[in-house]
Length: 302
Image 1 (spheres, helix red, strand yellow):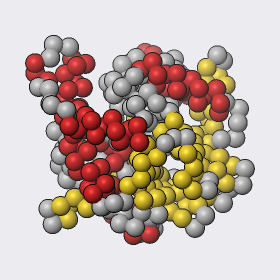
Image 2 (cartoon, one colour; image 1 turned 120 degrees about the vertical axis):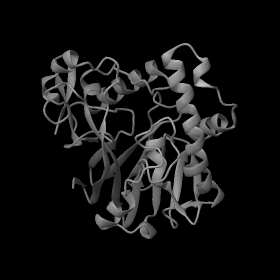
Image 3 (cartoon, one colour; image 1 turned 90 degrees about the vertical axis):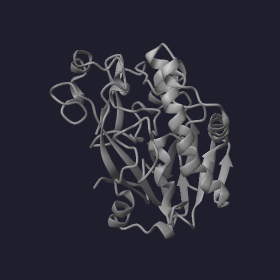
Image 4 (tube, helix red, strand yellow; image 1 turned 60 degrees about the horizontal axis):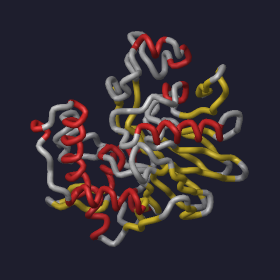
């Protein structure tokens, strides 16, 4: 199990599942990845397949417990993703196995509201979706929440009526996201456990939400600070370490590719040469490192 000490704060990664990202980043072909030698063997296989994880981070800070992103979850209706549709991954059991009690969580932070970041917000109990962390406040960026709320109310588009593969993909994904909103977001709102916040903001000492838009319209990353030490939890501002070396490599899931690339450049320029630890939400192990210069680009130094 990976964990890191940031001053007096402790961050633990709880892994839900491994993740193959082939096809997610269109430029990340084996030949192109082979030119970024430091990616192998941890982040890219010898055959050029890109590796990742679906994981959440648990922060113990100031006698509080904070959970960042809640993965895919169990029994969710995700029709556009057969590998995740109505599956059981057991993250809650893994969470308890790591020594954490869901009832003791004080704060749940969602970097954005995609299917693989909000799943364990709720669990299925007697046929109803109920909050997994009943004593926590769930924080959603207002811009993000309002965007997906509007999408959830929009009339669905039949993907088979669209000509372009990219448009068909997004139509199917949007239909799945409507289910995500109904099962993993709306029950939190109905329970009165959600707070809509405007980033940047500091919901508690040592925890700061930073706007990192592009992947989604209201995407945020999470800064953790304690005693002069700092960590930066990426969310999906970075999906894979190859985007540290090639910040212009956007993903097919980015709502605004130009904005996501600009966000990555800005983050890298701020972090390079500093002691801030980058924690990649989808990075394979080792999932954290410092950003250092690498010629006219950057690399992750675990």
